[in-house]
Amino acid sequence: MTNPSLLILPGDGIGPEVMAEVRKIIAWYGDKRDVHFDVSEGLVGGCSYDVHGTPLTDETMELAQSVDAVLLGAVGGPQYDNLDFSVKPERGLLRLRKEMDLYANLRPAQCFDALADFSSLKKDVVAGLDIMIVRELTSGIYFGEPRGIFKEGNERVGINTQRYTESEIERVARSAFELARRRNNKVCSMEKANVMESGILWREVVQRVHDTEYPDVQLSHMYADAGAMQLCRWPKQFDVIVTDNLFGDLLSDAAAMLTGSLGMLPSASLGAPMANGRPKAMYEPVHGSAPDIAGQGKANPIACILSFAMALRYSFDMGDEATRLEAAIEKVLADGARTGDLLGPEGGSPISTAQMGDAIVAALDASL
Ligand code: NAD
Image (cartoon, rainbow, N blue to C red; front, top):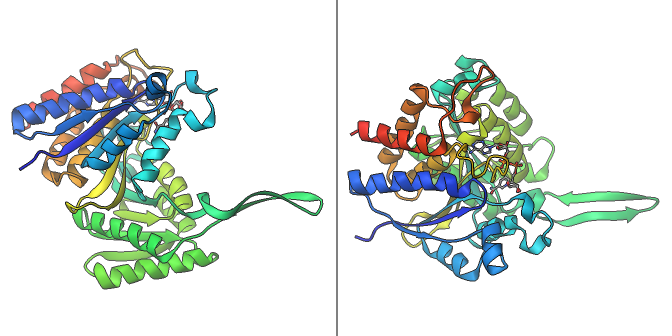
């Protein structure tokens, strides 16, 4: 049997620092669990521009298309702010998402008990929270035509168009139902069918995909504004939420922050199933390249390590190992290990990026 293949793209700023800690975890799996990955590495973002004059070369793009999963650190930095739009670091990221056709963006909101005090909500509302927002990523109002700012009589009018085809809704609905089957088997679909035709179609198509292909999954529908309220009131009622690009943008940011620091938030973007049945996939922390702390050993590597845990679960069918890794992180946090971003106003002594990685490896050792 061939090993699962993983392309690592550390990127800029703290990207290489947090990725170094993921490499320790990958090495641990090889040494202690006899789980091996064919790891390749490439450049993306500003570091690729520095070497090749482009934020992503065709060779790296091809490699990304050929592997089982891509794990990306972060891109960008102030030194690239004045570059032409076409070669800005973010263009590398956008090219990966577009050419791999990653239409389902997964944003978990998961609250580790040890960090429940970090949330702006009451501890009992968020402790143990584990929900997944699936946001449609490649269509909807951010892409629909017509768009633009036009002259109309004596004034200008700004126009964006919300547009969804049935097949676009179907495929993201399938992603959500598939995920739910690996979790607690519940999907809540959110739109504004009360005021938007695209919402009426969304609701109808999600219901149809459910009835014909996933009748075993529990499905409910909610207006997105009511959903936002419910997320703040009692988020634990949800398992998987599926929604469009615009609502998903807002709801996933709100849900993620229920659980505390940016340094803790992983994400995945999935596309169509490949020949091996697994989806095309790219995993990345939600945070950026954090130039303010880059090169100082201050970055929290947990968001990137949790992104690797998502890869274990969703690309490599190693759900048990993903759970092991998440439990190791939970233990390290419960034992009081904190990078700077996880210290409250009362302060404390932070550990470094590398110390956090080492602590997680030690907790993995203890799990055997
Ligand atoms: P950012 O996420 O890089 O940083 C925001 C704040 O959070 C900073 O104070 C930073 O120090 C802190 N932070 C972020 N990640 C952290 C971690 N792992 N550990 C500890 N602290 C952490 O967002 P920004 O400052 O708005 O953007 C900086 C650069 O990153 C820009 O060039 C931006 O374009 C880019 N960016 C890239 C991505 C991506 O690669 N996906 C996402 C967002 C921003």
